Length: 265
Image (cartoon, rainbow, N blue to C red; front, side, top):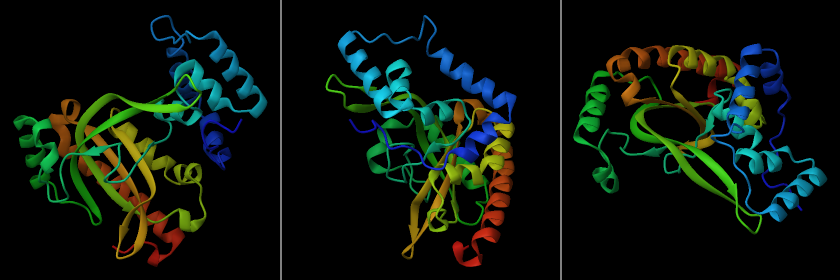
């Protein structure tokens, strides 16, 4: 049987960062064991299915296959849930996050009934008060945890959980795939910035996508930061200003490494 999920490549650097930090290791441990406590523990009702998963995980050396059975999370899902790496950005038309407005701040036609007047008013206030950084946009968006689970025939499905509605800051960054970097290696590049964002706004949800943006036929990466409205409403502009500075500094460093033509500003 093949691996249940594609194996992440070149993970050594990102794990060396985690292993060098007691705090990161503690967060990963707590996240994993939270899924195994009495309240959250999942028990497979099909003992044959459990044994089949266990055997296939053993035969393939597939830790994610086992983790999916134990806690509905792959290895990288656990890292994301522990706020150790960004969630994967699925593009502006993707499933996570789901954009509710366009680049001009207007509600999308098929999303108007999903947004309250208060939420949209708050978004509009922020949208018009903030001077967007070069190659960045503000959106109203819903972010989720993507939870995976086995079906009875050993396939894997996903479902959305823990919706957070907020202001999404979306920044263009150089295309890391053109630098021959894997997703895990791209996470390593933005490691410091990612954790500074977490320090500035602990509940912020950070997304990263390789080659999810395109302009004039040129692809680029995108970093998104979702600030939940209910948690950051009173200090939203201050947090956005700080995050702008952090991401722009990261982008400048990436451009110095990749070359001035790696991103058109």
